[in-house]
Image 1 (tube, rainbow, N blue to C red):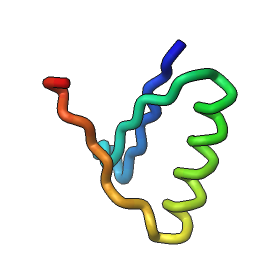
Image 2 (cartoon, helix red, strand yellow):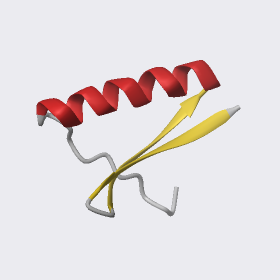
Image 3 (cartoon, rainbow, N blue to C red):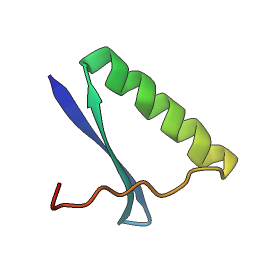
Image 4 (cartoon, rainbow, N blue to C red):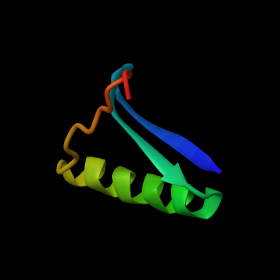
Length: 50
């Protein structure tokens, strides 16, 4: 099963990623949170047309 991980900043979506598997999604959320805390999170918005 795939999950969509959303990252928001001040109510605006700045990143969206599709991740396969519940455990992998939790791991990816932790990685994204650490990047956000470090100030190294790059926007990864996927096109809604894909």
